[in-house]
Image 1 (spheres, helix red, strand yellow):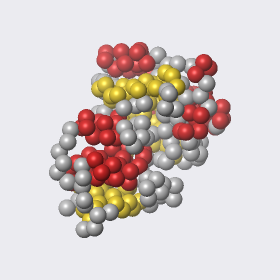
Image 2 (cartoon, helix red, strand yellow):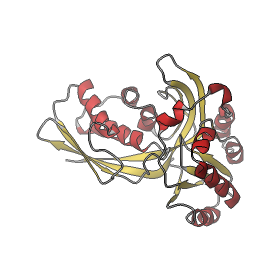
Image 3 (cartoon, helix red, strand yellow):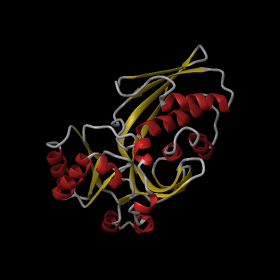
Length: 283
């Protein structure tokens, strides 16, 4: 018997860096939502007590470095599971794109193994376990829309954004989150107004939400990769209502209410980069 899980990509509507922690990480405040672009995870029991990962991607490892593998390992250790599992990942989310693909895969494995082996722990416990794997895994366990604080493990649910279209455009580069964080100078960061984004979600105000989108890492990534800045300028010029870089980049996204306008922007952006997607908020 196989178990199937979707692993939706995440978008940052707001990303702020609060302070450097004693453990070397940063305290963050991030408003995130999920979109209808997702990897597909298939979990199949194995007779022997081991973890196998299969995927067709030259950029993603299929061993202990893979977050999905790590999720299965910590799940087995936490709940003393002496069984094996084969994890098949059908990748649709671009790699190293600021869309949380690896974290989404890990979260889907945690949810799926909870069902496959009838452990029946709560989502909150899975999210707590996910925090030991990577900062975004806790959010991805829940999905939907939320504000994440601390290292990303403190999750507070929020209303979903108003219905809209999302145009994603990723230049042909990968960005290392670790490298971007190493460039942070707290006193030079431009901090977004996260509270206004949260208020816009509670009131369902699409225009206000778009006006206050913000990402404290955007300037850093754009200094390192000028093509990201140029791509954002093209998205703005194309007429998207709200435009922002997601995560540490390099993906730029635009939010639009009208389908016809969204399709026009999507077709226009395809002339500037290969990885362009037109999706909806995954509410």
